Every structure is written in structure tokens, then in C-alpha cells.
Length: 133
Image 1: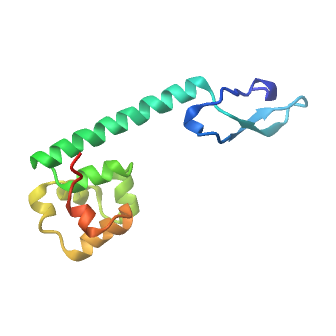
Image 2: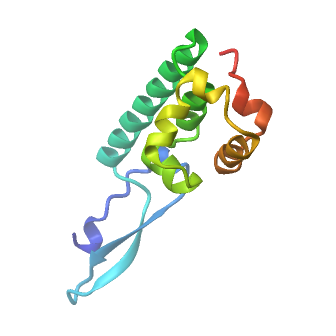
Image 3: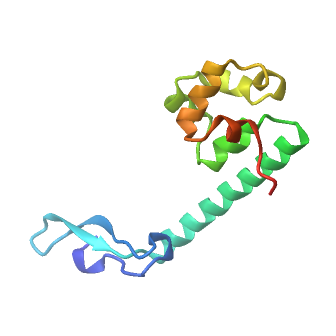
């Protein structure tokens, strides 16, 4: 992309900020250029955020029904999925999948709960409960 072609669509997803992108200058060298957004990127980002919000709401409903543990909701509410939570917490993915089962989650040790609290940056009380909607 040429330097003068860098989109400046004032994307609402940037919240008034600029993003550094690289474009080719007149001499054919890459140069950092600020962009205020691109309409297509903004649309794709908004669709992804909407999808994440839908997944989070579904996890909340499932947790309220007792189908999954509160961890399922809190994980998604903080934009983690199983692989990223595993990487951040030190648990294996198969362990996290087990911890999503209410009966297993209810028996987790203090140490394991504290690891989740530290990773998700929430209190123990918050981890063990669900918002009322």
C-alpha cells in the first residue's frame, strides 16, 4: 500500500486513537504511517466483538442453568478461550475443560482457584459467582 492510500476513515473502534501501519513512500521504502481506521476493518472488528459478546451471554446462561461452571462465563468475559487461558494460567487445556464442569469446579483446591483469579484478574468471590444479568 502506498503512503497516500493509507485509510483515514475515523473508525469508532479506534476510539479516537491512531494505529501505526506500514506503507511504501515515494522512494519505495517502508515507512510508519498513522491511520485513523478503515471502514472494512471496523466492520470486521465489530462483528468479532458482537460474536464474542454472544458467546459470553450464552456461557452466562449455561452457567446459570448449571450446565457449565462459572469459569466458562468469566473466561469469555475476559476474552480468553481455552488455549489462551491454558497458556496464561499454566493449566493444560484438558484440565480447563474438566474445570468447566460444575461438579469438578466445585472441588477445586484453593491453589487452583487462586491461579484462575490471578490469571483472570478477579477476586475469588467474583470467580465463584455469576452476575445477575
